[in-house]
Image (cartoon, rainbow, N blue to C red):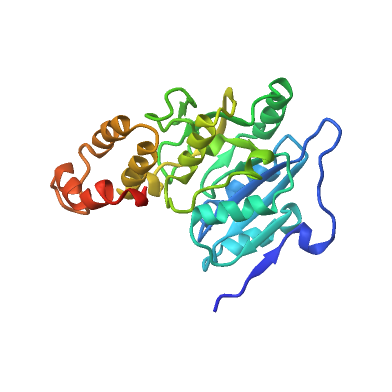
Amino acid sequence: MVSKLTGGLKTLSSFNKKSKSGKPLVSVITVCLNSEKYIEQTIQSVINQTYDNIEYIIIDGGSTDKTLDIIRKYEERIDYWVSEPDKGIYDAMNKGISFADGEWVGIINSDDFYVKDTVKLVVEASRTDKEAQLFYGNLIKLDSRESDDLRNCRECKGQADNMLESLSLNHPTCFVSSKIYAKLKFNTRFRIAADWDFCLRLHFSGIKFGYLNKPLVYFRPGGISEKSLLVVFENYRIRKRYDLKTALKQLCLETRGRVIGNSPRPVVCFLRFGRRKIFGPARLF
């Protein structure tokens, strides 16, 4: 049985950070599992932000590599960390949200990292646009997963227009009001696309989004959402709730040219194998 490990400033004293006059507390959450390769860069990008009222929380899923050694290295700069098995990335995110005390909450994955003034820019935007309850911006996509060369990158603008078709909101750049998370969290029925589902639910509920036309996050490509066919099923299930025609159209577009495993057969094979999941009982959706 894997034991629960905890650490960070909150476990060493009763001190909890709070919002100050003109400086709201911003919580940043990183979820990780066996992330020794990149997590130190992620941690450094948070603790070296130009904004100085940040609460940093790390939720580890029970890493067996050197991830915990790296986390402990920065123990005095991390407010709380826990390492224990979880039920997936979105369960871990929900857990992190439950520990957060900030007025705004950002979630940065353990292979991505913030631009140095990201949090400062979000706080400044929140002062200007007091109605927005979610802020998002642009991300800088690295050339490859292994690359740290910031010269060969491309900036991807965040777009909330036509969200039902597009997946370009750039969730890693999002900062959400804690008032939203008090009412709504990630749907753990989705293993890959719960962040997009979450943003769509806010969008169709009339929640105002604020856009920063500036780069906020460096993003490493090659994650599970870019590799797995499961994301196509999940995207369909999410879209179907709002518009069946759009869901079917995007299903065809997203599966075009994909293959099953190492098979060279095109998407028609995928549709045959996946038919029950796609058109199965309504209760699954």
